[in-house]
Image (cartoon, rainbow, N blue to C red):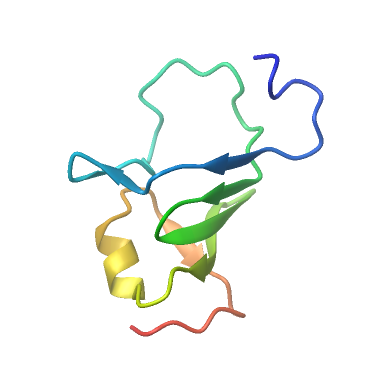
Length: 87
């Protein structure tokens, strides 16, 4: 896709959930035109870096707990050691 071809950094801004379901999935269900090009995902609940081993939670919206993020995120993610969240 032209929007991601040849750029240095791709940031996705999106809602975390739609219709009561997570939009951060274990595996994409749509055709991919720019696989492996996203560096950062920002949702209304948190900020995730995309690393070689998957998603890394680096920030969360105020009042959002780690438990809430885990329950609302289908994809696995690790938590940055620098991030301090309520359990």
